[in-house]
Length: 446
Ligand code: SAM
Ligand code: SF4
Image 1 (cartoon, rainbow, N blue to C red):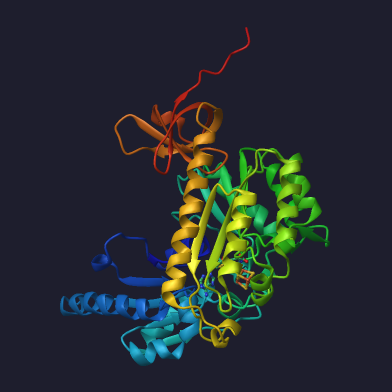
Image 2 (cartoon, rainbow, N blue to C red; image 1 turned 60 degrees about the vertical axis):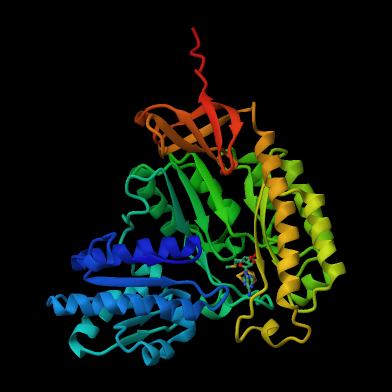
């Protein structure tokens, strides 16, 4: 399995592994040893299809080499490029056996059988009426086995149609999984050792799943139910849209200790003109007010965000508004991108495309500011004592690594029995992308 793109693809790859396990497949690291290779693709930015075709060129050589040794290789292309390009993949790479979209991977066994029977290629990029989650086997994929942290997809697709984004076209309309199915999967994960769950969705806070009581549950209500699972210590969710940050979810950040004080809340731009052109449905000041409300509920809340520079029509003044918003809010972490034309989206054909060199300059300035803020945030936790959830060994002998509540990796000297437990750690040092600290002895009452 080769996985590109977001956490949802990581989750999907694990579920495809679950689907294929009853057929006798198990994951391997070396593609030359694989009887089946799935390339799980991402379409969000930059010549996505070209990258796929170049990788397929490499995989073709592996397939041919194995074939001369009498070994068969099923080659599948999955994910959002498969959804967007469909037939084109088979035209340009006829040696591919299966093309499947993100909504049809529960049908992989049929596709494998069909490809073997027909000796030709199979394509399935439907948006089926049935929900794939109803047909997937119980998850026990490598992403959960023995892991302390795991992803769990609760919502998929998007109805918001931001001007620049392919997601509504590749992942389809917004849909939420029923509460019972999410809770059952979460319980299995916790039984296998998971202590921290990140709920995933393209618009995760738009979650509106059918509850066991027949009503519609919000993400906040789901989070409360998850927090009742014994052994589940921490809950996170991503990615949220500012428009869907409901009052109950904001209040949950005050009332639900399991909800970690770190929120990924993309704003994309700080200019009202550009936010309007992007069809984001809120203004920069509305975003500022939302952050204020969240911080009033949970003063130690840290924020991360996504930014796009050079959306069509973005002027120097618009860009300055984005810099101003970043200074006003203060982010602990951020992902920033140059606008990249996605064919078929409204912004692709918009006039006033921004020149590449201007995008480069803006991105550099924006990233310098965000880096400063990230360093300052990481520095601000030095000399604090924070609860760290230990996830595994560090790179150096005798070193263990865990996560702070704010998602920072924290290194301490310690032993394997820390894994899966939460311990107070005195943070002593900020490293380039992580923190170092010492375990604090917990006081045992006499
Ligand atoms: N649903 C999330 C939201 O509303 O913010 C974003 C999901 S998108 C998969 C992840 C990020 O990719 C976006 O927040 C945006 O910053 C970036 N992105 C999406 N389309 C892009 C494009 N055409 N060019 C550059 N960046 C893009
Ligand atoms: Fe894409 Fe997010 Fe906008 Fe949906 S809300 S269209 S996923 S950027």
